[in-house]
Length: 154
Image (tube, rainbow, N blue to C red; front, side, top):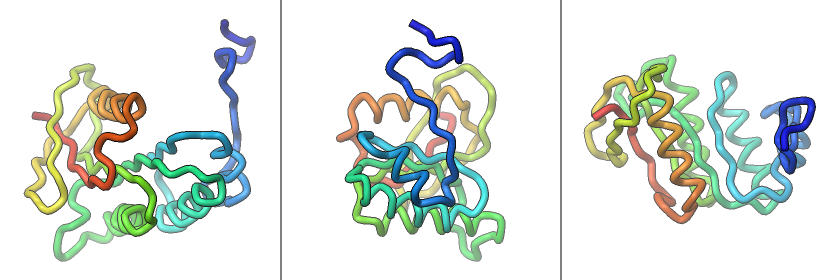
């Protein structure tokens, strides 16, 4: 069944800000997994997300950061993505961090995962590939806990 506003029955629409702890805590109430794929003040957002998850009793988080965040010297444009990853990793939550290169609109599902500490593969990856991997994590949230993975086209 689809409701008149386009939402399926049993789904809810929440409007809020990742910069507002109360909005986040309310949105996370009763959830099993939080998916983070944001732009903006990522350091503040990540801090708020971690705090709200703990307040709501949610343990599992999947966060999208960026390829290159462990480069030395760290390019200025990647500092917010590094801050997000560092905050999530240090949170004590059950996390998976994804570090993709550019996203494409391709429909192919073709990707490789490279753990943190190994050379990143690079190569633009389709949104469909990222969605495929994230959906696998939602289907089996016990996979890849504590992993920080580069995801790239094979």
